[in-house]
Image 1 (cartoon, rainbow, N blue to C red):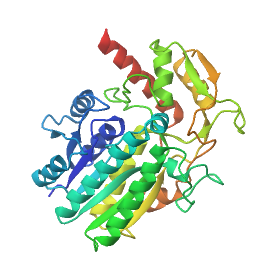
Image 2 (cartoon, rainbow, N blue to C red):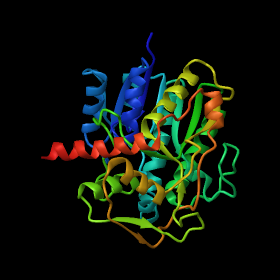
Image 3 (cartoon, helix red, strand yellow):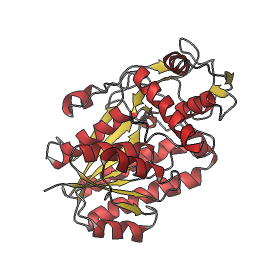
Length: 344
């Protein structure tokens, strides 16, 4: 019998790519979203890629407990992957209450509904921001969490703690995996789904592609005076499809009883640091376009250098990032051109 996975925030950037990989791995998927930070194009793209015209889509606000409980009552949910959250570091510094209210309440409602159902496997979409400004890089799962540098990062730490406590108190009925992402970029090779920010992008790659295509006059690079080889921040940029495949491995691990503890943590990154400037240069080279960019002062909440040691995910889950940065940046540009063609 097929297992059913609920994907909250399923129409978003990461959620849509994860849904594709889950369906292709043989799972039944229920997509749920309130479309506060995306539109229905992600859902339509998933249907087109997978050929699943009957794919369930539920319009749900995960901050509304009644709607979440109704969702769990309607479907035989074996696992839930929780993406539904606000995710911009800079915006969280400006609007902390909005971030705490949304990101905590939505997750609490999911856990409460899972408990009421008698238990569930919960995969939480966490972030490398929980490590704060690490003392040493690369970071492993044993790297101490530092005070978060933004309210966004703080909500991720708090949700991690909430899941751990819930798992511990459940007596084995709730199991959890925390996937700490580094910097997901790129788009599906089909160019049918990708990152679709509303307004001015908060993430680097959509800002790069929008500048390259002429939507933005200039790319701002925040800070060129960091203690790094070229003065710009160092990050672990991971292809979105590689990241999505990690979720399939994690869900399988939970549903097949392969977990070694009731709550596990995995870093999902490449282990290869790349500076912001190196990424910009690589984009120009692989796509044959010239970017207009300038350096501006540092941005609040940004850490200097962080990248993953993904050894644990590689050995325990049998997952590994395989796509090159060139493939990833090519897919991001093809997605931007796809959006441009749609608008013409």
